[in-house]
Image: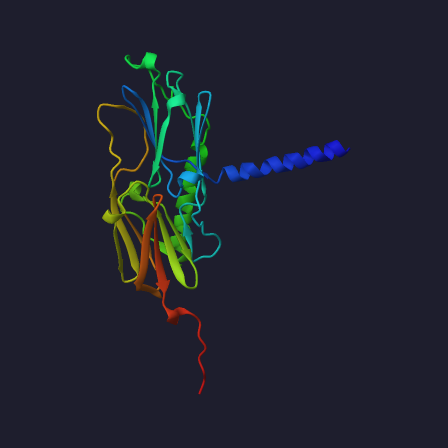
Length: 131
Length: 148
């Protein structure tokens, strides 16, 4: 019986993040390929270096960030185009890209990532496809 | 292979719809701050937040990757206007898979309260967010009036 009660409590906990997920901003991104690799630029205004998190898990690249910007709530005399303080977006990387050598920089709210192609793929053109 | 894993597409467009609704409400209610609708649809850039307290009005513009010195900020008859340009042009000789970031000139305006003091304005740019703080005049605060 106790176990059952615990399970329902856990379920109600997992519902909460689902609500929060709608409050996540999806940063606008430019992605282009040149001979050396892929460059990704993402707009993440309000995010400082300390609040930025870039992770690569196998072929998945995820970028996350949070801001301290005040999000106005409630009163009529306030206005908010941006009603969330978290950014999140994920991408799938080609195995031809060398995820150990990602170069990242953040300047004025713009994240720039350069992911080089593995050396054996450098000379020839590789196919990169959005799905 | 360079694809988005998580499907945020739906929520992304839902946010647009919600924004449209909110903007409609702002205009219908007639309360300030009124956000002037941009001339062109695409120039509803940059996004704006406005936070109001008794003492001051804070306007936040989310404009990453611009030179703050080249932003034109003016207040005329309680209308705060911010003009600027962002260069996010396509680079040549490369192949694009996504081109979502705003490129070009932008222009947004916020109708401030009557008591906004155009003499007491501060602006700062940090991490791609422009914050403009406008003090409200003393006279706007509640004061007691004696009957003789």
